[in-house]
Image (cartoon, rainbow, N blue to C red; front, top):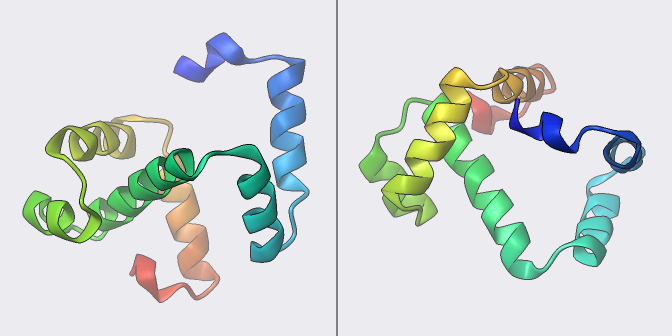
Length: 103
């Protein structure tokens, strides 16, 4: 894992803080305080690309719908299929909670 280089008390504290968020509204407020609009757009696009790949969309469909470059799609695809299985965990949990956009 590449993130292991950052592992430690500060990163643990950061993640613990995020895990305390209890609603979409709290997430909006926190990430608005934490990130620039462009940083949020980048994270949001990668997540959208991952969901589309998870749902077997083609590169062309993803490029058009998510306005993502083939390089971004390729990077996300590598993480989706050869990473830590975190996308699979999240998308399965979203499906269990009734989020139809992951089906």
